[in-house]
Length: 178
Image (cartoon, rainbow, N blue to C red; front, side, top):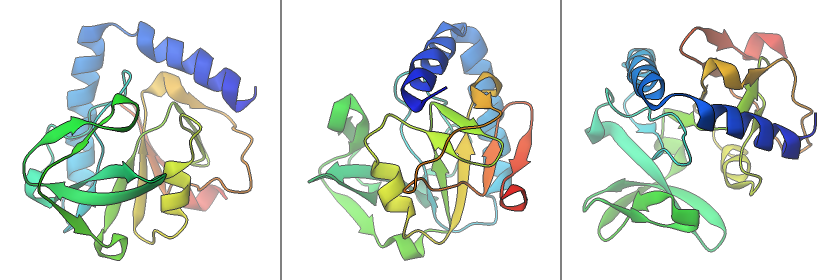
């Protein structure tokens, strides 16, 4: 199945998940992620969009940086004044914020429509994360509901593999599967 069809099929499956189910799974996943990154000093996360997992419930907000898109590039910053809808309506820091060099980020939590067991992902097709992750040297953690983990995604030359994929049912170590 090509990436466009994966986006449609699994986007619809994720959307069809019961709201209470998603809320419970989000809390469970956030707890798992918080435990997974507890020894990391600085963590990049994201604001959930379009029925994505909300990974931030149990994370320490004082160690979190969020993506901001400007001029077709993504950078990370710590919000000082809150969030506002930015690119495509995705919440991002606004007003005063502290921008950080990606080399100072220990781990990044990456959203996706789907992931495979090797750590490849299907996002929304704009390439912001792939361009950012190309230079990122920290730990890359993909998060997905179990129904959004597939056997195989045909990767493109520019696609970046995660180190781990975490779902409500398992933690997949991806580096060893390459």
